[in-house]
Amino acid sequence: MAQHEHVRVAVIGSGFGGLGAAVRLRREGITDFVVLERADSVGGTWRDNSYPGCACDVPSHLYSFSFAPNPDWPRTFSGQRHIRAYLEHVADVFGLRPHIRFDSEVKLMRWDAEQLRWEIETASGSLTADVVVSATGPLSDPKIPEIPGLDSFPGKVFHSARWDHDYDLAGKRVAMVGTGASAIQIVPAIQPEVGRLTLFQRTPPWVMPRADRAISGGERWLHRTVPFTTQARRGLLWGIRELQVQAFTKRPDELGLIEKLALRNMGRAIKDPALRAKLTPDYRIGCKRILLSSTYYPALARPNVDVVASGLSEIRGSTVVAADGSEAEVDAIIFGTGFHVTDMPIAERVVGAHGSTLAESWKGGMQALRGASAAGFPNWMTIIGPNTGLGNSSMILMIESQLNYMADYLRQLDVLGGRTALDARPAAVEDWNHRVQERMKRTVWNTGGCTSWYLDASGRNTTIWPGTTTEFRRATRRVDLAEYEVIRRPAEQPKPKTRASAKKAESKSEAAA
Image 1 (cartoon, one colour):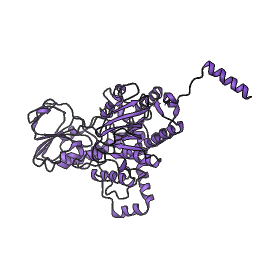
Image 2 (cartoon, one colour):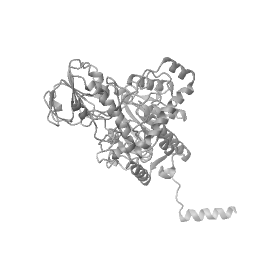
Image 3 (cartoon, helix red, strand yellow):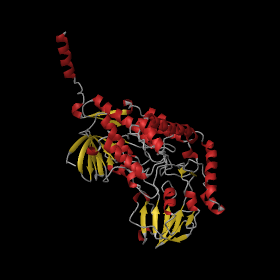
Image 4 (cartoon, one colour):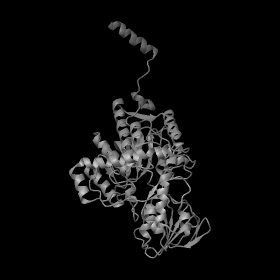
């Protein structure tokens, strides 16, 4: 990267959000931009998560860009390999490669109030940008809990998002920590090859069957030949999930039927009453993300698997100790303990107009106007920002809505002209956040009786959007300038008239008359 390079837009990250932003910029006629990527390839979380069994829990035709349909998805729920290949394809087809700077992790972003631009320091050099679009994503930085004795464990330790493919699990005694979306895919994938698998479960998840199947050659031929059929399939999948939203957001009691189906799914595979009791949740389904698997419960019923209904609390040499006092000797520990979602590390590297970091600004909880703009951070936007997550549908829908907002944001800057910046008004951010949190109060995520990664340290839900994707798209269709302060460089501000200049102008006016 050339020193002192300046671009109109700097996009951070090359996952779905970053590549989507890059495509939208080109479609808007903007080519003066870069995509800063810390790794050596695109893909975001679908590059980083390559663990055995890794797949998406959203149907393939909905988990893809509307502007880049893929008629050749091989399965109804695609695996990591095919999703990553799709993102590589998007980068190639839309000509994004020349804009991407690999191995360019952002170390610091600082707002220059005099020049009205961002100064960005990366691992490969420095640059400046008029606008920053942060698309690092909430599932990018793994979280490993602080466990006493972990540093002295003599065996192998890694997180699910940093899978060590060189380590052979065959015949090993393995501890799997966590029972989230990654763990329920990893457990059935490694159970047949490990010697013994000990699963540490703090809270049992609700698990529904995963209706996955191969997409036939005839279906793919039809989607290639008649593109409308791909759109129709996507529309049907979207519509079904839109109809489900009210049960999550307004009438959680209606989810009782779904709980019965989930319990029936468990009962088919788990015959041992004691094990079934361990695996039965005591909170409303949907409070945590509903997981999909048809192989998780059968794997837990195998004789080489032990389920410990307690969290991992201590490690003594090769012995892992649960909070309930039970112990196991293991050769490897795999953490499926999630990510830094409500405390994203990138926030510590963004310094705004008042000299404070975004992390400091969000100390009381993340909040951003329409999920995109934070007060005090001019010309900075985030994709998949606060309260834009979904509990039952595709995040690509939310990303595309935010791309609409980003595009109009840049158009507004063009209309205003000159060296200009937009800074979200604190009152507008507060008003938006208040309305979101008021709607959140009756949702299953707040009332379901669980503690989830949707909640921050203070128990506030700063992650999920409490409505339909249609509502969010409507809310982000265009930028309302009344919600922003327009900032111009001092030299470009209209000069206030002095008394002398006012009299002079008045004299000229009279003379002209």
